Image 1 (cartoon, rainbow, N blue to C red):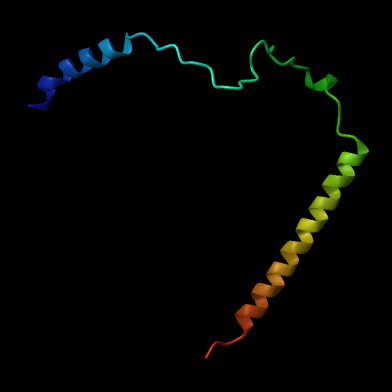
Image 2: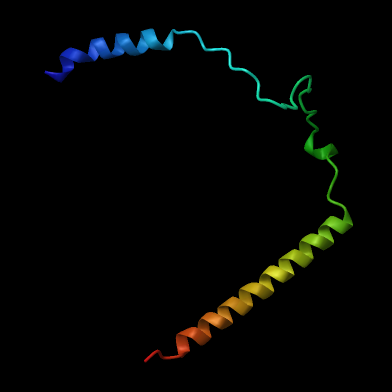
Length: 84
């Protein structure tokens, strides 16, 4: 019974897909006018992070590891206390 409507559904879907795409207005204050595509650089010529950036990443990782340790210690303390 439902297979009878399948060709109608396919034809309707195909006809609606053939419609024109509306011209959408650009957003107010759009900064993309006249912009060019980015220039892609091969990986072997790409610049590596500077030593400052590497140091910042190391500090951030150390701070995150410290926070993880503190949270795990706090969780262990909460597990050990009994609530009555």
